[in-house]
Image (cartoon, rainbow, N blue to C red; front, top):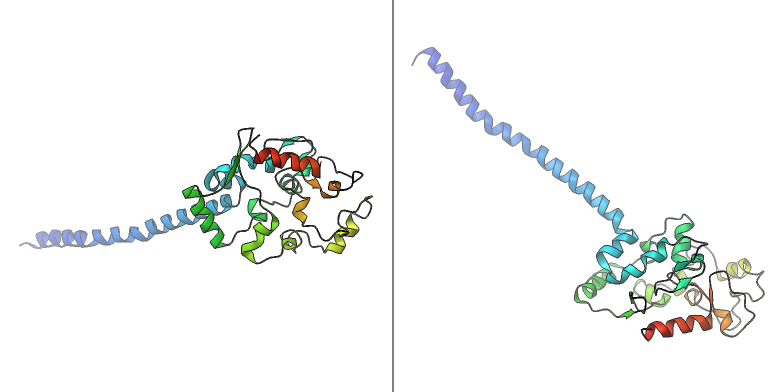
Length: 239
């Protein structure tokens, strides 16, 4: 074999052995791109996970009735989770907290433990949850109390609202905040009343004092205890 033929043969061998090395060098780039895409997608999914639209689209079939209560404009009429008119959406805490600009979303109030999320996921998949079918054609879950919302976290009902992240106040602070009202709803004249007895997130809040006192001041958009009982009875009856 001539020197020229040997040189050509050596070049071919070099090219054949070098080619696989070039292909192997591409894998780190491909893997890096895939990882980057997954990280970005995961971050986007996590952000969406905290939005009401996620709860409405993915997890909770009955959430269709709740999203409008969150998106309602305060100081304007709205619709509650049962399809009833609310004369001022400010009376619904979901709308009010969103309007206050504190970026409160579903998970700002509903902070489930991992066990709760797993259980709720299983209930959703199997359809093992109780709902009401309202006259307005809405399907909504049964109403939860503050005790229900904090039970799995080992919290007291007051801690749902009165905590450092939300309302960093005491019961005494609340009494002072509403001291100008004729009948101060935060004075425990008949024992302490849970915040959720008055303040409703997805329907008009209720002036609890009006259950006994006809002269109790009812804030704009709120309803009386009698009106609340009538609404709940109608929902439970499917009317």
